[in-house]
Every structure is written in structure tokens, then in C-alpha cells.
Length: 307
Image (cartoon, rainbow, N blue to C red; front, side, top):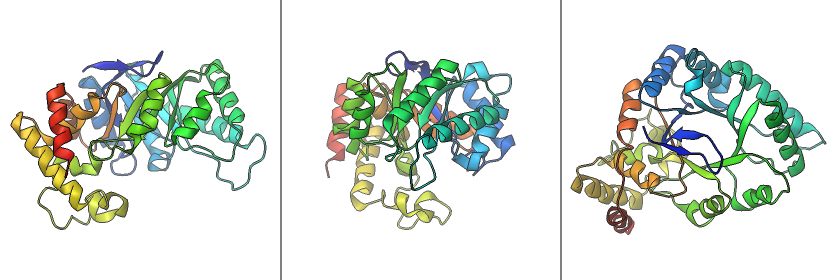
């Protein structure tokens, strides 16, 4: 599988990253191991988890699955903000230090390759965040630092801080149906030399094509159970999906291949995060990252999105 560097100076990662949010929530430790081993065997090296996934079980299950194969993986995890409503000096530092030690234990590793701030802590001083992360890098517990779920002003405040921190990536929701970041975070990340790591590349399943023609969604599906995802299935987006499917079919491709190929054609993208609950799903996602889209094909996509 193709690899790209995670920003300027970052590690090489597979263009398909395995999102581990299903581990400990939708699948157990045995099934997690099958998914992880299938991913490694297919050349996936980028594994993305967080302390909150599965209430901590994702890191535990992933650490168990990587036994004996840890060095094949670029391991990314994330820490949460403080839980308190008021801030005292040292609160954020303590939160990060506690989190990194727990993640190291859960993942059964001596270092975290990429450590994300999962959500920006708007009340904490920026210096406390950066000083703490710098200390973790100096200690060798963290090799690279990254940010997630923030707005462009927060990114600029981090980048303007006068320090040499190995900041490598920004992880954001981005797909061919959700392009709000393209005028803000994406160019700002590119200017800063950061790799962009999109999640929800398949728009919660809408871009797999499995919901085409449906008027109602299964109760156990994301669209049937979670209003946040259901709002993606607007009338306009359903029309766009039909148009995009027609583009894919003209080129002998699947809708999923178009979704991955379009993202990977964006120059700032280093790796695309996609979850899986079975080895078969990992195999399908790995097969879908092979469309190297031409400018003419990308223009067809733009036309298909105009409704």
C-alpha cells in the first residue's frame, strides 16, 4: 500500500488509516485482533485510536492485537480536555500526563507515535498545553504531536507560538459531501506544513452506496439511530450520491473508490481514516484506495456535486 509522510518531518503512514473507534464498542477483543491483523497484512500501518473510544477498551484491545507486531504500526491516540468547568494552573498538564501514562499502559507500548489533542481546551493557557507536550516529546513517550476537531483560529494560535514542537497533522471531518474545511483549516494546515487526516470519508456510510434508494433506514444503522448522521442524508446529498455513483460507474469504479480517491487527490491529505468491524471491511477499504484520479475525473466530480 502507498505511504505518504504525515506533514513536514512526520512519519510515513499508509494512505488508508484504520480508525479504531469500533474496538470495545461494536466488536470484542477477538474480533479486534482479526481486524488489526488483516489491516497489517494488507499494508495498513496507520492505526488511529483515542482514550475515549470504547471507554478505554479500544486502546486495550488494540494493544493486545499489536503484540509481536508493534513496530509495523504508526500508532496514534488522543487525550481529552479537562473535565472541570473552572481552570487552575496545572490542571491541563495533569490531565495530559495522566492520559499519556494510561494510554501507554493500555496500548502496551513505550511510546506513542502521534499524540493528538482530541478537542481544544479553550479555557486553558496555550503555554501549558505546549509545554506539557514538549516535555512528553523530550522524554520519548511521544514522538509526534497533532491536533483534532479545532477551528482555524485555534490552529493559528498554536502555530504562532514561539517553540519547536513536532506538530505534524490536523485530523478533521472531510469528505466529498462535507467540504466546509476547504477554505479554512485545509489551506491553513498546508501553509503550516501539516498533513491533513480526514475522518468520515464515506459520510457515515452514505458514500458506500448501501443506502441508495432507501426512504427509511434500519433502526440499527447510523442513519436510523443517530440524528447527527441522519442529517447527512438530505435530499440534496442523496441526489449528489446518485450523480457521484454515475461518475464512478462510467469509470468502472465503485462509489467508495470515488470517495477515497477524491480525498487522496487533495494534495494536503496524508492518510484517510476509515473504521472497520470485520476483516472483509478492511479488505474492501484497502481495495478502494487505488483510484489515482485525473484532473478530468476530478472535474466530473465537481459537476456531479452541483445540484
